[in-house]
Length: 435
Ligand SMILES: [Zn+2]
Image (cartoon, rainbow, N blue to C red):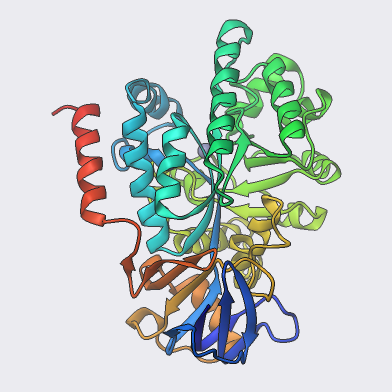
C-alpha cells in the first residue's frame, strides 16, 4: 500500500534538468519515495489532494536545543555573557528530565507545524528528549552537551552521561533517532574530552556536534591564552574530521575555512541566533562555499532565536549575507533552500537518502499552501523557489511527512495533542520559574 500526493501545483526537486515540476504527483511506498512526476495510482493507495500546494523536501535543522523552548522570551536583549550567567545557567541547574521532555515535545510540535522533518539537538536529560522526539515522529540526531573545562572527575561524569544516552538510543531501536557526541565547545571542554569525543564518534560511526568560533571574544581569549586560533587548535590536537559538525563558525579566518575544507568539517550556520546575540559580523559563507565546506542551517535554541521556523531562518540567512556583503546576488534563494535541505543532509552525512524529492530517497516531505495571501501571486516556476524563501512562513505548511508517515495533514497534528503539550509546558514553567 502506498501514499499518493496527487496534483501538486509544483514539485521542487534537485534534478538540474527539471528543478521545478508543474502539476505533478509523488508516490510513496512504505518509507521511501517510489515515483516523482506522473506515477500510476494504485487502487489501494491513500491519496492526498495537493492542489494549490508546493511539495518540497522536509527541512533539516542542523543545530538546535529543543528543550530551551522553556526559556523562550525569558531573557531577551542581553549581552551573551550576562544572558548565560545571570539568566540561562541558573535555570538550567534546576532542569529535570520531565521538564526537558515537555520542552522537547513543544519544540517538536513547532517543528512539525513549520515543515522541519530532521534535526540535530544538543542539551541535557537527552534520554527524555529522545522519548519526546520519538513520540512526535521526527528524525533526529541527539547529543548530550558535555561541559568539562578542567577534565578530571567532572569529565568522567560527563562521559558516563554521554554513554548512557548512547545506550538509551540503541535500546530504542528507532531508525529515525541517532546518536551524536556533543562536546559543547573547545573553550568549555578539556583536550582530553575533545579527543575522547573524537574516538567515540569513530567507534560508533557518529557525528561530533560542537559549537565553534561563535563569538569574537571566544577567538580573542583563545589567542590570548593558547597563542593560536580555535580552528588551528582543534586541528593541532587532531580533532577536525568529516565527522565534525561545527555550529556557528562565525569568527573564522580564511585560513581556518581552508582547514575545515581540508579536514571535511561541516558547518551548521545559525543566522538568527548570531544576529540576536550580536555575535558580530556574519559567518563567511561565500568563502566556505568556495572552499567546498558543506553548510547547513540551524535555528539554534528557542531562547536565542526565538522561533524554530526554518522558513524564517532561510530568509534571515539570505538577508544577513546580502546586507553584510553589500551584494544582493549572494546567498540566492536556491542556495538557501539547498542549505535547509540537501546541504543539511550532507552536514549529517545523509545526502544519499535525505534532503531532496527523488525516487529511492526517504519520504521526508512537506506541502506548502500557495493559496494564502502572502503566497499570491506565484509568477511561475522561475520564481517559486524565491517565493518559498522570501515570502513563505512556517504557518503556510499544510502537511509534514517523515519516513512516509504523516505527522501533520491539513494543519492537524497526528501524534501530538497541542493542548496537552501546552499544559505540560506550563506545569514545567510553574516549577522552574515560580511566580
Ligand atoms: Zn547552540
